[in-house]
Length: 375
Length: 75
Image (cartoon, rainbow over the protein chains, first blue to last red):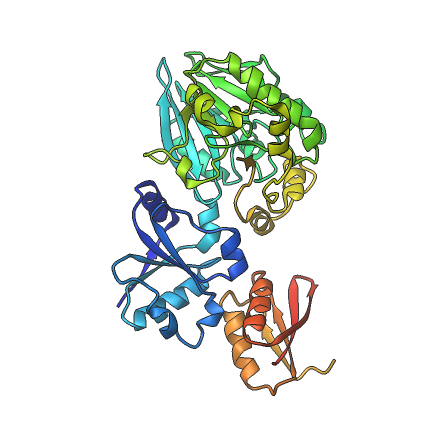
């Protein structure tokens, strides 16, 4: 039979469309347990490739014949080998091009809305890691928010839609992924905005983003209003774009809220987090469409693959916004937290410009899920 | 520590370091030690897990100028 290649984009479509897929993950057990390709109708078998070197006969009966089969490994090599072995046994198997490395880096742009006077908002779904970044375009000018390090994707996208990137924002100093904001700003001569309270240790120049700042994109005055909302980090800032979209950074997610501990300040920041979520956000219009910087579980995806929800709906449904007792809230966000993101200290230092790891090392640092939320 | 054999797997990408290690191991007697040199970063986790699942003893590893060195005792 044959061996086919499947790209991360192909697999992303299957996630969005809730298609069935049987994934044979041949990485070692620890890596699989820590992080895998998630899909609502995906089934899995994890057998390390090095246990299959003598043959795949033993696992044949565990592979269903009525589902499409994808073999996945860290970088591709082992999955090709195993897919070929399965093919020799008469199965049709695909391997994932570039492996989990490519999966971690894949960005899928999805349009999330129109601006009132023309223009659009796009969400870039980093499906393998749960990071969300944004491009707001109006009249040939674009702003990028919370960019990942795969900067070419944004640059090419902006060029394709004929937009010049004029402003680049990070809602906070990220601890789970390396920001591409500074590089995009350098390449496009755009202004790079960072909340000054998160930027005390940075080694480069930036424009201080503070509550009350208004930045205009395009001729039709698409305003980006900054809203100081500390808690995940001390500088965390949300944006209201065009009075319609609330970019909530790592403060508020769809089915979870931000964690305050990634800079080692959980006890100090829990009060800020509560103030941001329970007071500042309450003053905003419930009709705002919340666009967070992360999703944690695949259930948070909408039908079209985007991640968004009306603020009013989140006030009603998000558990983290409905804890009346302050002590209970404090407990939720400071105790029993999920493990911290891989290499988060090094990632923070890289985002401050204090470290300059090469691309291979950056990839390793970012391996795994984002883990910025608590539920 | 007496090394029975040294395997050069430098420059090889996954799965080849393990494929070669497995092959080299078959030529050794139980208790003998194989030294492996590799440059693929993934080799560390995979060799550790492979040694465990194959009943071999992963003795130690060192890193020297981007070359990963492993010592595994045949089980």
